[in-house]
Image (tube, rainbow, N blue to C red):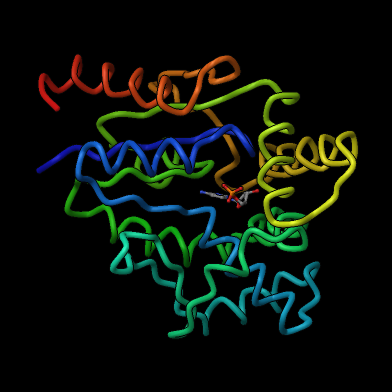
Length: 225
Ligand code: DC
């Protein structure tokens, strides 16, 4: 069985971009668990559900069937009850509310069950906050990808500008900081570096440099690529 690779880290550290490229290099399946939490947040907002009500969120997630699939251009698509909602997930409103939704144990348990099933056969690169520490504690390679708050804000700012948003840098910085705080302080499966994870600080690295660095670690550990 091919190894599983767990990638965790704070918001905006470049996890998804790196994980996606890495999976392409290795011919592995990329699983974006953040997109799954975003899908729940999107639906909760769409349905006008009170995000403070754990019961309402638990009821909602019970009836949501969230799945990931690749289209013909090899782009990852997120489906919810059969509808492609990929384009709805990286908006500001979803980013601002997703951590509140992701705190709820019933939401996490439902999604984690799916995530573990997807990784059961090995050969996945899965990114999130709790992958190495909770979802896949037996993953053969665990990475904790970080970058300075300043650099993470710059990256997120560029992503939002490309979507046409005009956002104040300091406000965005505080928003990212607050999201990390909620993610790190929640009771169930918080954002945490697994004990056996290798830290990769990407503050001064390009995406390609980061991927190459991880490929070297992979090669060293598993002997081939
Ligand atoms: O990686 P991202 O920014 O798309 O993640 C969105 C949010 O989802 C993040 O703020 C916390 C939550 N999340 C989580 O709690 N556990 C994961 N495994 C992945 C994401």
